[in-house]
Image (tube, rainbow, N blue to C red; front, side, top):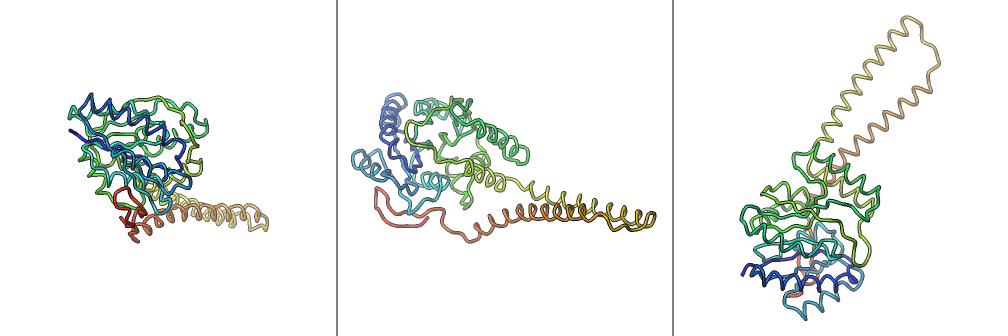
Length: 319
């Protein structure tokens, strides 16, 4: 029997987990009956501050299908997904959220797609943003258009982390051990044929979203820096244009002085120009600094996450 591993990152999901477990047990029974597949659930507790870990401990004791990893602190969803993929043993591996915004019923369709052998990934794509703040939806669409224009890696608009992948695709993803991870870009970068499955946006069954507008903005910047060097090219072009502009101004001042003399007036405009140039320089330094900071974090080679407990051995370790 084929094994399907379901990787579930969790951060403060105490209220949603019982509902999620009930839904996945039902889906697992359907997969066993309809596709002759066994299912394992690999939960990753990303340093939750509520009773998430207690719920996972109880679920693991009561059900051999449930496994869990617990981080020593909050390392972020990207680290949680990487840890789950590392510990997933399945022939097919699924990533999905614990809040049931990713419909478990889609797992049957995903298995059908991968069983054909034509695809290595069946990924869900949101076709609506019902319940999402309009401002967030607007900037999300702008982000997808921007990154697809400046990056060689195509990221489909509405793509989410909810997907089922073959073992060889998972192994390819795990071979990329970069510290600064942007999984949407990594999924696309490794290649392999992907079947996109549309679905309607779902409301959370319990709890609150962990993504603030600022958090999403930082995540978007990380994606741009991780998969495009175009900002560096733009900074260089901006520097060239400003140098040419400064040269033209110098010529203009020399000609004006020779023809009309050198009046004292003009210091307000000069002050504005100095402030403008200073702002441009700081902006360019910020872009360069962002790339330098990512390089700095990579060369230190710190572990992507640190475990404090698992359902199997509960040993402390680094990976």
